[in-house]
Image (cartoon, rainbow, N blue to C red; front, side, top):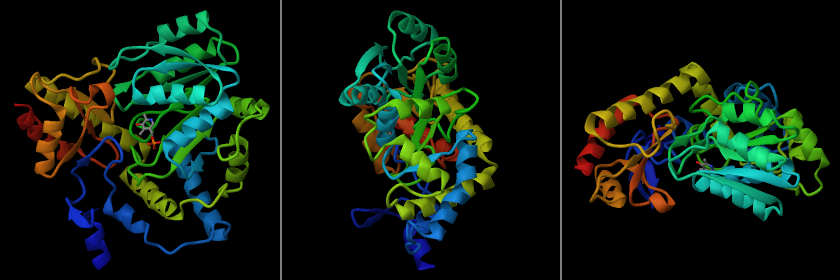
Length: 373
Ligand SMILES: *Cc1c(COP(=O)(O)O)cnc(C)c1O
């Protein structure tokens, strides 16, 4: 099994890197060797019955993962493509964008770039928008959609999207568009129960697949809205995506190899005990970082109760620089993320998502402690 041997090491600039389990970037995250191996299978035609069978096979598993009985759309694009799909198919004239970090800022930017009016509700980096703030903003300003990021990967903040959905329901004809890129598959996202109108993720975060696929779910309300919008574009047209997906067909030539990887990863998720077991493991990882930080006196950027389950954003001690901490870890074979944007020097981010374990954190955290000392 030479292929197993070569694939279980990380290729980096032609060389090999550390084995699986030490790569804690908040995306892309580590991909298990078994999943990588799935991608060496030969091609199938994208209009073949084999493709139809593949898509039909993954459909119920994706539904279970996204907690929905609606079709889960699969796109051959990074998550940002589905952010654009959300806006083009969900915003009529004017959206309220909840901005608390780099990715929610991107969502607001796409509203503007799509020729819609964007009203912003900004909170400081490291904070969450609270449901009452959302209600006040919607009372002040009539909009037809709200954009938000569930787990803001740049700051490690988890927002209360279930409560947002409750608030939005108090207003007539407002859709809730949710970036769940680092929450779905790593912490509870109850698409149907919470009444999310559009929710999406990407393959390279909590799903622990290579980058290149996006997954999204649209409510019936969202589909009805989309049908009334004339400038949905072509590549990210929700209506044609849905039409294809319900026949288990891709809209265009998809990334076939990534679909093989998806098939294998969904089977691995089943073997772990399904999505709830996966949430539980992520919850345990988050708690492990919380316990360690309390023990050694390291501070989280977000307040307690708003910590993401998949990415911990920690303040670097006074007099230290994030990039030196990241470099020190690198030297010992571990990869973590520096801060993002304005938080580049003052924070580090541990992407404990996907297929990572508490046991690996037990090894990693003391090394971070040493680099902080
Ligand atoms: C990574 C990320 C994105 C962007 O995903 P791409 O796959 O790079 O397009 C969007 N939102 C959040 C919260 C993310 O973490």
